[in-house]
Image 1 (tube, rainbow, N blue to C red):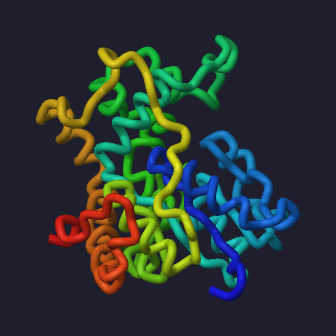
Image 2: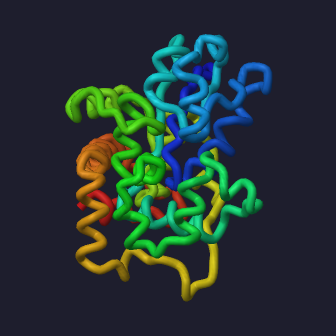
Length: 265
């Protein structure tokens, strides 16, 4: 592109969004980057849909939903980041449990209810919870983000309409295909990096970290039941992603470690 397009980044939590924002945000002067709008359930309820004061910026990036996008959109390109929903939920729990440091007063607050739950509940009990303050993070969060708000459990629109919205995006990131995502970004957005930097990586005591490959069948079933729409949306997005990057396969050699043929097989 010969000019810097306006961008609205739907930051899907725990799916390499921090790394994407580290590349997107410096492309815009601070004066045209929107200030933080909402980052959690409490903030969403406090604003109650009053997003008009945030209109007029060229760049928006955060845990924002379609409700904010439709309030501020003025020719912005929409983009987002995908990750297998099971892996995302596991990473979220590990992040809350081992990486988020809060005071005792903060942990007692409503704002950080889910963080405290992750620090005090074993993984099985955490993902099985029916408390909306936890479910807002682990039940179809990305689907809700792209249809209404990731901070409300209300469901709107159809899967087909949401897939059509994904198809309007000139680019998006897929965690399971980092090199191909970078290849597409170079062509669609003019990025020069061969791959995204690593940022906000979840770490912790190895013996205490939950791993996807070690989940039992019942636990996987609970996560999948809560994320049927996220799984369907993810599968659609990855399929379309691979179709789109197929036309760029001739440039796969530009990447350091891009096993294109295996990715599209």
